[in-house]
Length: 282
Image (cartoon, rainbow, N blue to C red):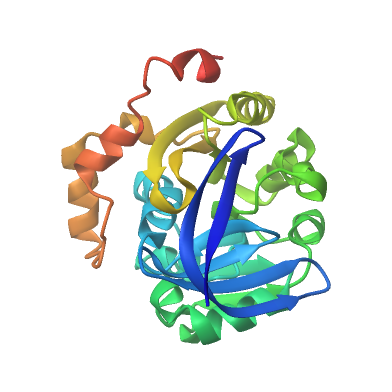
């Protein structure tokens, strides 16, 4: 039976999709739901929030991963905190210099359901020998790891409740400690229209830890809004790349199957709308 699947943007607004429930389970950590929809195919939800969908996952995952990965001259090791659906890891393994992509996912049920239900998102990355999966608390992994990574992607739920700690200066400092000197961290920040304070606070926290913080924005159909991302580093600044340089790197690395990202979109996502500029100003 079809039902309306609501995605709240804030206390006053939201969007919905028509869909049919495929699976619902209460894990030790969260409520997990899978729906089939006509608009976006299969949708993955956690605790009542849309995480990813078959048809628009590339809007989010390509923008989370490639601006930093392309800006890095030769990334060898990458870490994904969260990202149990496999979408971010699948984008990372497109970069041939990456020897290891390490996923630290809290909830094993997320990985289990993703493997079974979301092949169009992970595209077989769980069978890629370069992917190493650790099931456990990503924050604890950052506290204890002795590894160093060129790229860290924090592919997390929104900073609500216990997840808010993951967007704190203390967590970003732990991530920096796990990075190489020229490494880069990426994460999403939410909607500058529906949650402007969240964007402002996330950038302020990043700037306490990193010398270069580059906010950028893209529309995500599943989330019903323009969505904020950030790349943070002491060395790398993806805003310095021209479209020609980006397309050159894509060609040199023989990166295929990009549905969103190219040199022109790289430049475009870093173009800040006027109404957003006060939020992102240092």
